[in-house]
Image 1 (spheres, rainbow, N blue to C red):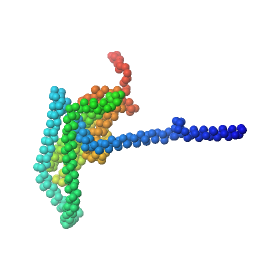
Image 2: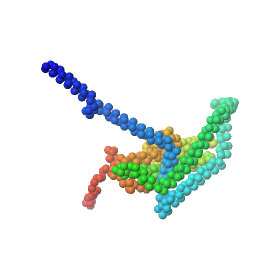
Image 3: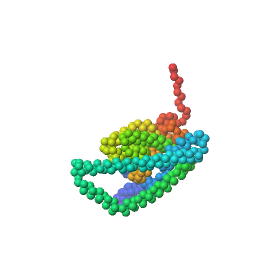
Image 4: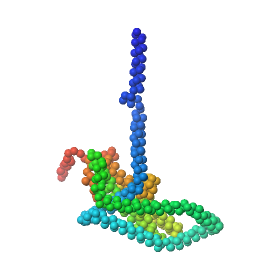
Length: 418
């Protein structure tokens, strides 16, 4: 009996141990290594975040025909809103102020484009003459230079190029038709952008307040303040970028005029427009100016133009951007380059144009969410240059506001014994 009892007792003990090992009670978590648990928790959260970002990116790409004009309208609103505010301060009705600013902006843009096209048309014959002269010099160098090519080889190369164009005429025509369709889409997007811009300038604050109603009440003030901080950063970014673009265009344009390169006004305008894509845009448009100088005026002139472009770029990087941007937009150059590259890869030219402003807005907004525990949306003036910046965290992660007591009055300062 005792052996049987002991045997049954041992069997029951082994069963209990087996059940305890395979049960789903919370204490089973202790059998899983802590590193594996942390890795699994981080992994599924990371996958959820990646899936959410992918869905958002897909929606933005699918609605790019709407998203891009709205984003450009927001950039222009950041540029034109200070002028509208100034007119409103002079007791001009807001609707009339927005209309005046928009008409003045469109008139300036139309006048600039008309002037550029006129100058390009006027300077085109001179460019053709210099281009033909440069081609003759290149042909002479290929025949009498170190390569010692025969004239028949050059003629055969030209004929092969013409035959290639004729054989691919259908593809070129299809590309032209596609370009014509793209021009129609651009015009439609331009009209949509103007329509959205009007309402941003007239009712921008009301639109933002209506948008924040979708945020839960306990965190509404924090999201409101973060959005205002982001738009204030966008305003500062657009102001500084416009000033830098003017300096780039004037600097390189004056240099081209002194050297004697043709098409000075169109090239300077191209540099001005390219400067709105930080770092990359001015470099690319400056390279176009160097190429035009090389083709029209020769190698020495191209070297001089290259030195002018490099000098203007150094002025922009080391003087203008730190002076004009200051604390408004703190972005590392590596982050700017990566953002432009990603935007260009994902969305082409619009992506390259909008990537850095988006990064600036996200940077300011996230800083506000992390380091402003008790925000006041009404204290943020998005159009005021002297508006308080987001508190910067110390190295230990605390912000300047964390050093002050959150409850009770400020500590009283003792009077100076002297």
